[in-house]
Amino acid sequence: MTPLTTPQDAQDGATRPRGSRIGARLSRRKKLFRRRRFMARTVANLDRSPAVVALDGPFQHDHVYTRGIRLHVAVAGLPEDPLILLIHGSFGGWFDYRDVIAPLAKAGFHVAAVDMRGYGMSDKPPNGYDLRHAAGDINGIIAALGHDRALLVGNDTGGSVAWTTATVYPERVEGVLSVGALHPVDFRRAVRRQPLLFLPDLGRLGLFRLPIPVLKLLRSVVIRASRREVAQNTGPAYQRSGSFAETARLRRKAMSIDHAFTPMIRNNRLLTGTLPAKLQKDTTPAPVWLLKQHTHRWDHLIPYARARSTGTLRVISIPGTKNLPHLENPEEFAAQVAQFGNQLRR
Image (cartoon, rainbow, N blue to C red):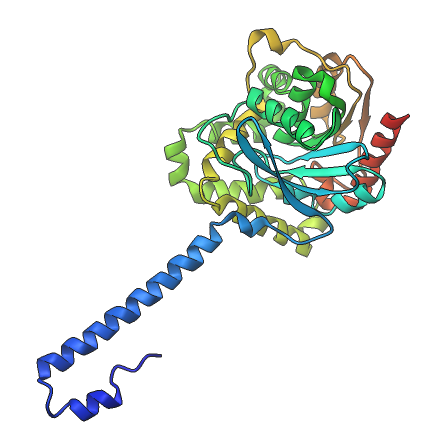
């Protein structure tokens, strides 16, 4: 700790006026206070930097340019191999797929886990947070990575975006593996017809329909909603693990990144997002794998998925997991994605 007096003070004390000595002490205290405040601001700025989600691992961080913005991807595998694009949900980021990137690359795929517009290490423009822009971004990422087509894998709103991309840009989509998600137009219709089956979803949808200034005042509520989303969609064993705490910590850090909070709010609205009338009835000719839980709710939802897909639709599940299998059991999840990808190769 910086002393309030120095040897020079003691030597000059007899000759320096008392008021001058007090002024010198106050000046030193003021300098010390400013230094500490500067250090606190520096730490706070680092905590709000996109670098907080720049994790090390068996992948490479890169950026691609599309539609006038720069989007971050964590990539692995050979560029000449078929592309698998991993799309996160509203509360997550590329890091939700950190444990499945390497196994998929080892299985012979070019793998990219993307930070959507407004998230993580991607650009955060003031607009473009709707389904058409999201699908356009995915279309642009596929081309920027040097591919004509890709297998899209998405959970939560990432699944909504994957479905939308497959209908708006069918020429770009080799297949869709949707984790607990429907096309957003279908999900909105399903909720309206059987609202009692979707009470937790209605709570979330209602929260994120509040005006953005109000939600900024309710930041702590939104952070708790992020943690609750992981808890509701994983089993007790995962919730007792260190991985659960790490996921919750990463999501909290991602939401603290400068200018990322508002895009996260807008992304939540994509779950039941709207499209122009001429696009609402478009179907996808690409094969679709729908990864779901065994619940009565899904008995109601599957017919919507079948009607949306004019290609083959396969309904699968991973035992012991809920709606976040890439977190609960990344090895088995990667194996299922690789199996789908290998089928598409034939």
